[in-house]
Length: 227
Image 1 (tube, rainbow, N blue to C red):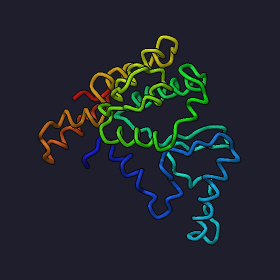
Image 2: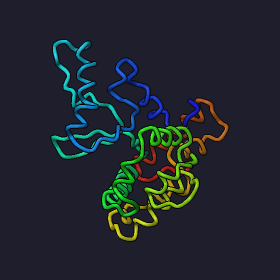
Image 3: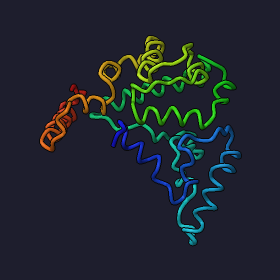
Image 4: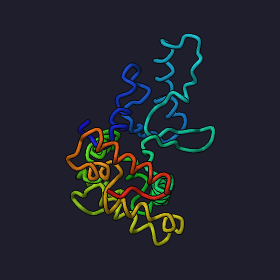
C-alpha cells in the first residue's frame, strides 16, 4: 500500500459518504459536553437523518473519530491503536498510553492551555506522517514537541516515545513491569516495520506465508515477533 499502517490509512477514508462521521479523524478542540454535542454530534445527527428516516441509528455511536468522548461512562475511546502480534504487546502499549495521558493531564510538561492551543490540522499532519512511516516519521512541529517537554526542532516519532517512556518508567510500576514488548518496539520498530524486515525483498506468496506463520507462533507462545 505504500504506508506502514494500512488499517489507519483506510480508517481515515472510510466515511466518505458521510464525512461528518469522522471529520479529520483528530477531534476538534472542544472542552465541554455542550460544545462537543453542538459541534460534532448535532451535524452527524443532521447528516444521518437523510439515510436513516426511521431514526434507528444512535448518534453517539456513529461518531468515528480517532478519539471519542463517551459521556455516559466518563471515558474516552481510542480507535487509533492497532492490535499487536500477542496480547502482552497490546497491554504494554495501553500502559504506555495511559502513562502519557496521565502526565499530560497532570500538566507535567506544559500547561493545559498550551495543550489546548494545538489545532486539529497540526495533529492530523503528525498522524498522517506516522501512518506513512511509523517510528521513522520526522516530526518538526515544535509546538507539539514542546507540549511533551521536548525542546528540539525535529525528532523521529520513535525517539519521541523513547524520550517519554524514559521519563515515565521510573515512577510507574505497571509500565515498568510490562516494558519488555515496548523495549523491542523501540529497538526494532513497530510490528509493520518488523514484518517488512522479516520479508526483506522476498515478496512472494510463500515468503509472506512463512512470516505470518511466525506471527502465529508468536501468538501461541505469548512472545513478541522478532524479524
